Length: 104
Image (cartoon, rainbow, N blue to C red; front, top):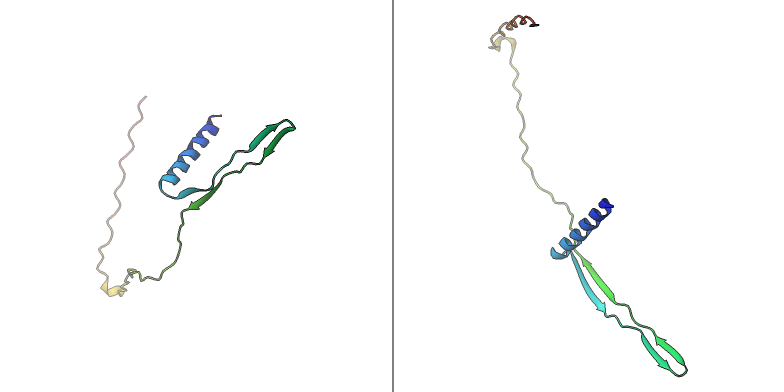
């Protein structure tokens, strides 16, 4: 039950936000008219009424494409021969300290 109420609240808030942001625009195109009822000695006669009509305009979203130029950095690669190697040998790995004795 709480979920239904929460969904209804979110829907009403979304509708109010859409109207305030001019994403929805309601205009009444035809007004309502109540049915006419006449009582005579011969009986009751009723004439039909009229329901209102509304026009709804919604916001638009334009999606398109365009051509553009994007600068992309190009990595460089340098290849050196074995005689040009100036890298020092890697140091020996450090020996780990001995484990501490377990305390009981």
